[in-house]
Image (cartoon, rainbow, N blue to C red; front, side, top):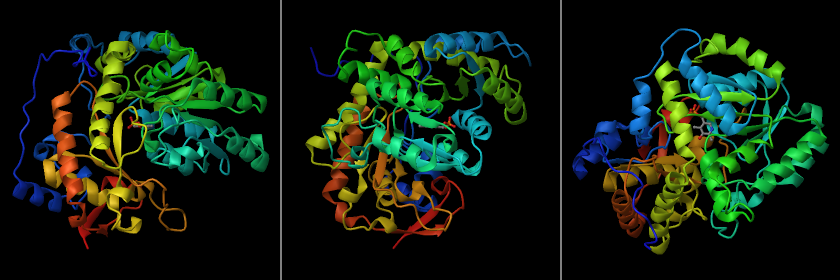
Length: 457
Ligand SMILES: *Cc1c(COP(=O)(O)O)cnc(C)c1O
């Protein structure tokens, strides 16, 4: 059998792709201030900026779109979504939101008192923002290996270090911990999964101290597939069974529907506690809408219910992980430095190693993402010092990982697209010394990576 089985779908509707010439690409990236977020979609050949909201929906989801019940209250699509999520995740309650960050806003507002700590397995940009804006203090308790891009022999690099967690409990006291945030998978560590054993152990420790465990469930299906492939005792379990067991080790979750729900918009918050649910429902009306739509159209809730169920199909999810691995292995073979092992939704280039002539304060990952666009028309994203932002004193957060994320949208591209992407990156690696460092010409105060502008030094 071939190592990489072909895509488990055939194409029913197509969107043409065009590529600008090099001169046009140079103009585009200069106009965008060397920030790939500011490029126009029409100027991009293959768009690997993000896997967020870029999913291709199935024929069944599109059929679901036509069954949208756009009643202001009590839409039947909400009940379908509710039944699906409660069945597949096993939590007691769901509150729909417009995106994952809508759910983060509700959770952080309800659960965090100023001065509380929120430990997590590395941070995510919007997640940490909502924690901090509510007065919370984020603490990274991920295992130390997660910060070593080259450490290949760790199957679950997203695991929480129980000693770090225990140390925080000893230091500040359990009552000062709002909740533990367990992200499955860990986006900024390179899409690295968390083991079932770790989730179980974290939950046991949390329960002993009466601390809530809230999952960031954004890529839970990818995480489940890694567990099936890597963790002893799970090889014969279905993805559905694994996801259900994962979430039995927690008290709720936030979810971005734009990732593993196979839709283009949406999110939700889940919890088991009745009291938290009441408070979330009071708040969702202020920020999102009625608790039976939470910022989503009826049709979007329908597509989400159908997509979440489809995502549990092993043929789908194993192919997705294979596509990412295919791209990663091509780069590794050519000697390009990438985060290992290859994660679930993206291949992460180690920009510090790729551009070792550029110091981190001159934004090597930002420069590399811009150079990849110029070289091949492919859009990727910086995940390094620019994304990390500044602390309250105004100094850069300096993350150990300085990465460029090459993210694969779900069901959108084929192996041949990824082959082209790899060839472009490899060509660039051979002439990497020509890539110049960058400096800010505009820097917004919050979530600066979205809109900041740079020029070459
Ligand atoms: C995308 C994402 C979020 C936020 O979700 P949105 O739908 O973009 O608001 C939260 N956590 C992780 C890990 C994510 O990747």
